[in-house]
Length: 417
Image 1: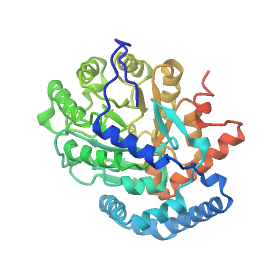
Image 2 (image 1 turned 180 degrees about the vertical axis):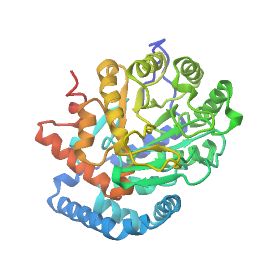
Image 3 (image 1 turned 30 degrees about the horizontal axis):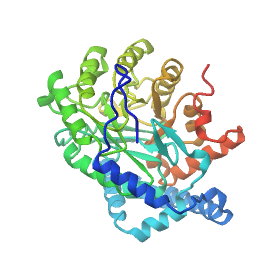
């Protein structure tokens, strides 16, 4: 159970577990009762099979699957990928085979963040599984957690197409989707189904304001977030509040301190048992970013996600008529700087989920050593394939052992003075 408290009142009563959380805890207990946990790393045969399978997946994706996907329009490829993963989740033998081949498990990767146990610190960032359709496949691949959404109180069609442009020379996608989703009532229902399945992967849902002029003023925007928060309360492992989606009609009103304070004051009134993360912008200087963190620390928030998409195209050869903002490697420099500063000044108060430019174990390890307890990614899946999660986990475990750590949590913030 996660102990939740507000910084205003450390004596706030701990909320009761919801029925969904009781189901989750019971299923996790039954899965582990009477069984000694086994790890791929401890079995020479399974470890060798896992390495070989990963190499085969890497070869197959690079030379067969990726050329097919990249021959499609990016919007169509995106939709078909989600449909395929969703459909595959209904074939248990296939999921079992996938888990046996690809899921690398290792005790050095296990961690506890915000009172939650994670099999590993790697998660899918919001933006891919908008409607919560990919959980079974992601769990079989071995993700430590996934973030569904961002979802909004009311269904959104999103912005006019195209939503995506590929920039392989920069390791990036230009994204202009505009929060397309089926609405938080349905998305959170899907999230709860994954949350109560008894699978080890943790489930988070990212909440944003509806992308419509109808939710244009601050009061309507706050009510929009609150509607989704009430729906999500007690029905997932975590909740992420996305205040920084840059591809919307109404802009990013809540990346200013005063509106953010009013939003979080309202959300504080909603009972929930999950830890809450705030998804932060990356296009703010440290003084502005620090002002936002000061506001966040006054509320019932346990962590921040650093950071959202990059807006600045300086030095990049991108057609002027392409709309959207940048994921992947271009997002890394600013996100990394904000991550390190946040850990230095606020690490005792807020956990950090680092996102942006994670293509290699070394890049993930940098974020961890500079303050990230969790690491999220999405773009590298598109460019490198589903086995990317295994490569990251295996590589991180190797780096941790090389440097003498027993658990990944020991490396968090080790390089920050």
